[in-house]
Length: 473
Image (tube, helix red, strand yellow):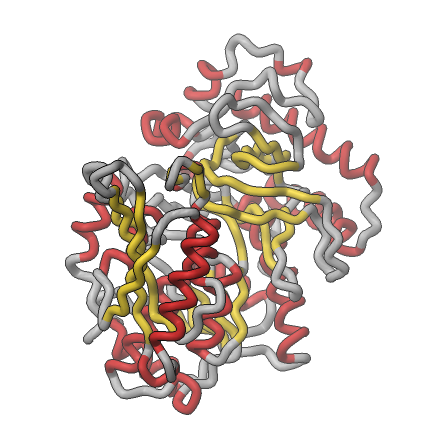
């Protein structure tokens, strides 16, 4: 693992990696972990109160000395709207202290700056390295697999972060973003074949579009490629969708990590395909998405994190907007940390037939037992009496599906039973390119056409983005 050799970052790395190693060796006592959390919390609070113009105002009425790592409720929340309006005022160290500069994609509002310094890179990457090393040992033994990285933009952390992780585990990596105007899908597929890449890391949407592109360009995914693992991230991937991806690629699928540009890597996958929190890096709260009431570190609700790494932009009680369930681990793998299951963004909740559903529940209802699919989209309408009904548009890859009508009937029956509304299934030869925009905008904008309401801002953004999302070149 790359480490700084001098200065404050080197001192932090030595302290941090000592705690990190004990965490993964299962020798970190509760008292020692609590001491780390308490000291780092107050280091962060003191730093942001003194160094961040935003937090100096935001926390001015709080007695920071009375805050403990076990009770953060006297602190106000930090929201995505705060980050968009305050921009560089959120930083609590000089921008020049950063070693990387990234931005959010800026598709649904101003692109917010997300610089990182050496402390933040070390702490975040350490957990991903443990995850990849464990999974690769499980699948490849002592062999270091060749990896293809397909990140979204040049100012996204994806390429740098996962390139560093590949180096940490001794793997060659090739950065081949197929939506790049230089690479394109034909070149990406050619490189995957010629370099015999064994691991592809991308979003679920890119994995599906790659499969369609491979068929378009005359490739057979199993015969022409060496892919053994798909490591997906960047958007929701329920077990049902992961199972479908495995049927399409003939490769195992891992929902490999959960995080964001603003908050870094919050959780990482284990060999058992479960997600473990990076609990040396964050104080975790689950809050009621409507009232903000804190349920503590476990339960179901909106994930809120307070960063324990005193980098250039630590966030305090940051509401991620993601709906999760957090439980004590019963996994039995090498990875420590509580288990987290992502069920979608809080903004992606939908009302159907008088009931509320999460994005994960809707995707599971549609995709359970579906194989050989290149994607799906859901259309919601109301009849003259105001009763909701669904149309599921399902694209199937002909070479992988013997009886499309049987799959359609299964989707119709299971989705109607799970969601409590009438369901029609349309088999499509090609879905609207908007379905490929999920990682950039939102699952809801990409996957849901809700004709009960006018298109919201996110849907309008996704529609514009979809215009140039072809895979023919």
